[in-house]
Amino acid sequence: MNHVYSGASNRASLYDLSIPNAWNNQLVIFIHGYMGYKDWGCWNLVSSYFNKKGFAFLKYNASHNGGTIEKPIDFSDLDSFSENNYMKEIEDFEAIMQMVDKKFNNDLAISVIGHSRGGAIALLQSDNRRIQRIATWAAISSIENRFPSGTELATWKKNGSYVRENGRTKQQMPHNYNQFENFLEHKKRLNVERYCRNSTTPTLIIHGEKDTSVTLQDGISIASWLDSNLEIIKNAQHTFNSSQPWGKDFMPKELIEVCELTSSFFNLPIDTRT
Image (cartoon, rainbow, N blue to C red; front, top):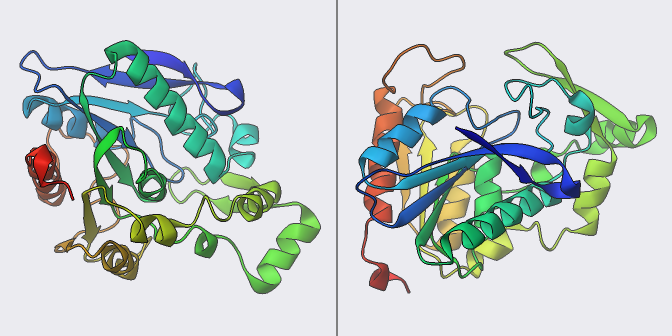
């Protein structure tokens, strides 16, 4: 069931929360990636998987992901998409955490899964003491490297905006130059490497062997900075062989493997934290 929260710039967006009958008092918060949303592809099946393992599961739409309350699937509001930035996505996550703390009175264990761009948002919360564990699925290792550079950056600045085609919907997705200006203003807060190197939060890094959207090197770098192992899923692409739309009632085996690794990691005793 969809619920409304107030995210960055007080923009209303949707989240859903499912709690199993045999709840283990652990909550998983899922952060979607670039050009994504909470109901993309297999993400509802992922939620059901974790519910069956005893976890409550919350996933939400970033407030400026291009969706609306009335039309949350795909991208009906490209103006809001054009104004999105990483700091807004951090504000969205903080708003979700405040809502969770109010609803549960801080009396539960919270773990976070971030996919792709959402993996960076998760890693940038590694100093948040309310979060006990983080899992990244195909996370980007650098925010700066996701922006245009050189001549493309100069053209972006000159024109004030550029578009990138959504490969599935064929929409021309606009990006205002103030996205880059916001990054420059908050460059220290958005430094994934710095947060990883200073992290004491147990973190699981998972990446697909055949990911062409976010290369395996990103996962290797994150694992190196965290001094942690990297779990490589064989024959898996960026979404672990899931897609949108997904008409089946089961996940691809590669995504099941990701879920199994993640749920086992989240179930490790809390006192293993260093």
